[in-house]
Image 1 (spheres, rainbow over the protein chains, first blue to last red):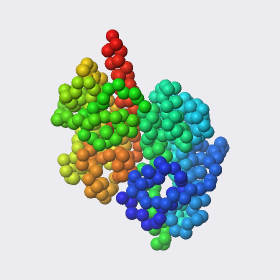
Image 2: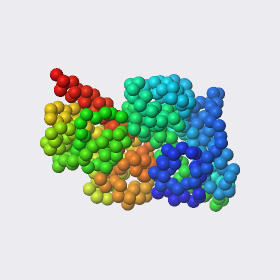
Image 3: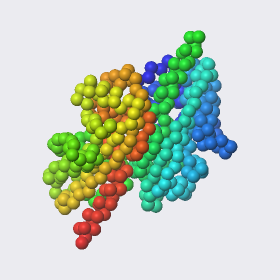
Image 4: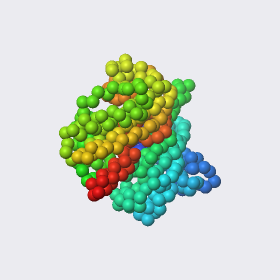
Amino acid sequence: MLELKKKIILASASPRRQELLRQIGIDFEVRTSSVDEIFDRSISPERNAVRLAELKAFEVANDFDDAFIIGADTIVVINDEILGKPANDEDAFMILKKLSGTEHRVFTGFAIVDKPSNKYISDYEETVVKFRELDDDEILSYIKSKSPNDKAGAYGIQDDFGSVFVERINGCFYNVVGFPISKFYITLKNFQKEIELWIEK
Amino acid sequence: MLELKKKIILASASPRRQELLRQIGIDFEVRTSSVDEIFDRSISPERNAVRLAELKAFEVANDFDDAFIIGADTIVVINDEILGKPANDEDAFMILKKLSGTEHRVFTGFAIVDKPSNKYISDYEETVVKFRELDDDEILSYIKSKSPNDKAGAYGIQDDFGSVFVERINGCFYNVVGFPISKFYITLKNFQKEIELWIEK
């Protein structure tokens, strides 16, 4: 698909993000960052997602001389409350009860850092997700499957249960999975061109 | 997930539908129908999708004594024009040019027929899909991959290219893949209860 001029480094341990990059035919290496996912309440959720994506990409970029380094961060928001990854099963239950029957917003920020120039670009996508009313039984069965554990908002829209919990979305589906591949693809395509033009000058 | 009381028969050869049913943990057998997918211009696209889903399910139901038989049909509509499966590469190109930079609607109708009672239920989902502007080069590369061939609207939202063509959707994502698993799941759950109550009476 996209002809890549540089090695791609993904600064994320998320298996979903890795799968999505593979889906659009991008070869990459994984190098995880040690950035703490701390939320800054003085700025919006989307600015937080972008800021964390940039921090992750720049930290990992230190280890490379010639590559594009990709960072990403997903934040789930309901009524101005941030829903992180569940701390335990009780927390997962509380989060899923909150999502039941209502709408929430998912933001994924991403950043691409070029080495050696240190030029970078970042952006985000927002998707509105509507859950149907969930029975407590369904929530408990889902928690038993362990799938909510490592996911912001305690669900995966691509899971067995997650996919039947979600009634509809408005925006990019893959953004909810954890990486907005459509916007990322165009952004990377344009960024690569800019870097080439900049080198030629 | 859902505890099924009967064998499930899927009256569809679509590998996408089979994968989606597996995703939500439903075991099934495949038995394809020989129903011609002929569009009736006197009724709406959604009614056509439901009607064809019912025809497929009832045809296959003739061969079973005790089962739930599932039929489905997906219709893609742009400005009141139906976009079928492409007849050839030129047709696929024309269809994708039409979708480029604009919105279209995807309807999937589904039907569940119970044997031996011959009771049935049917419904549909509608999703609005927005494509970004596509380059002719991208369209040609996608056609070369053969992926558009067997798909209504000449794309798969879960494909390598398809997933970067789609900017956003409004509605159920899996409906665009070819089967609205969220609505189907609830419909099957309720239908199964109704059939049980009806048998007990």
